[in-house]
Image 1 (cartoon, rainbow, N blue to C red):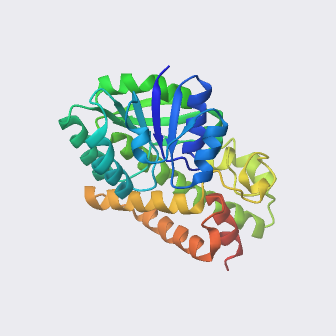
Image 2: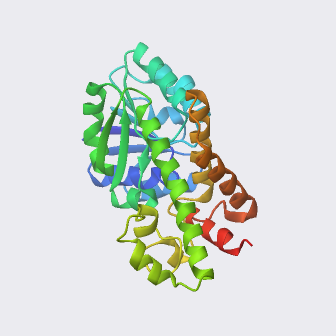
Image 3: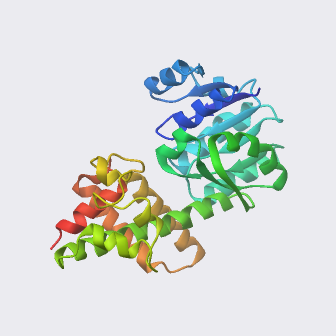
Length: 294
């Protein structure tokens, strides 16, 4: 059994922390929202009154924070100043590559083992412990982190050096964001041409255009019962989260000198989706905006 500090108990972090508790680890969690801490305590974990409670006298620190600035602040003013040098550091946040590499360098220079390990799989995957982890960091650090990641996820992939986990996540979600719009536009057009969603799904789900956004997460009610479209677009992955990831993709493209014209257009559509009230809806609800457009 390990002592684990878990900082960031949001929609993804809380079920991930609970899975570590179920596996028998002693988990102390901290979040700015008291109800999240209480939920972890109710599941058998411990509540921290401050970040330091998750940093001192632990074997592993896991962070799941909203943005790069939060990761930089928490590691820069708390973790790297206070944690014992044999503490394993795992950052599961989805942030920009530059910040991930900067924090990773600081941690390495101070003697820590650290990986960046953003996730894919949404809240359902977090609850079921079936997330995909895209991990950046040295091989030894990856091997140390893998037993804990295996509790929270099903697919654990070493993507290379520090920051490569973020690079993989950004590229993956750029594909997802674009493909969801493509599927939405196609099914909206099919409706206007008199072709039912079920007919088009039956054809495309086994044809050259099939993709995850269609076969597993179809934004149209009906053909895929488990998709958010059949539950009033309750979020597995919110519109705000997708817009954030598309912005990270834009920033990464700019810093690397890569043109991403489809991604740029997709970001503009997700920003319009947020402006029209889609922030807290599942990102697949962008279909409704597309279908209602003239």
